Image (cartoon, rainbow, N blue to C red; front, side, top):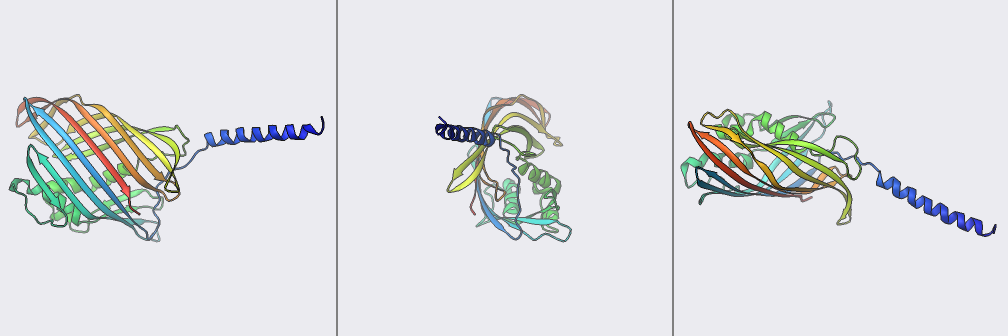
Length: 309
């Protein structure tokens, strides 16, 4: 019996060790944070599609758009005070906007091509600015965003519609929201957190989303260990601010479908890929030049982004 005891005990110890190891890994916490390696570069490619039907006074306004962007992000060297500059420059930008059969097309390879309808030139001016001007983001020593700006003197040259899109404070807020999807502290599998984001649609129109994220744990892809995050928008609101010609009387928009999957490289501190889709519909009432128009909206937005290197 004494000879068997060690083998029985070692079996028990091994089994106990496996249980404890499994329990430890099940509750292991990880920290997910963005990193900005000095003097590095990365290229990101994204495709965005939207499909919207806005019905006003019984008339449908159908808008479809596709946008392709490839951009390079260049990280500088930290200054003596710890600040760090990251410059984002668009390498390629193509967009097609179709409103009830009227098309607006733009290609950064031919940015000076005029719009078929002169009234739509201000829209192309925004696209030209997107493809032409780099955006500089300044982070402090703790990687907190402090400033987002165009090259010196360029903002003042923009048209009114483009200035609305490139307002420094709006750029900063949009960037803060873009990088704030990660949890505030260490998380373990199954942990959830929420974020609010605003989409500036122009002409004072703002759509605000409330999204719930969940950490799904580590996954293997192409020989790398990545962290998977899933998100689902569960609340949306719409507002129109500072536009006397266009006012929102009431709206009751709901999210009909929503999903987002993000793969994050914890070791390198960057997003590898992001795929998302959201569909919104519901009634609303607009007041245009004093005339109240009841209607409804059905909007689907899809996005796919990948880091190239």
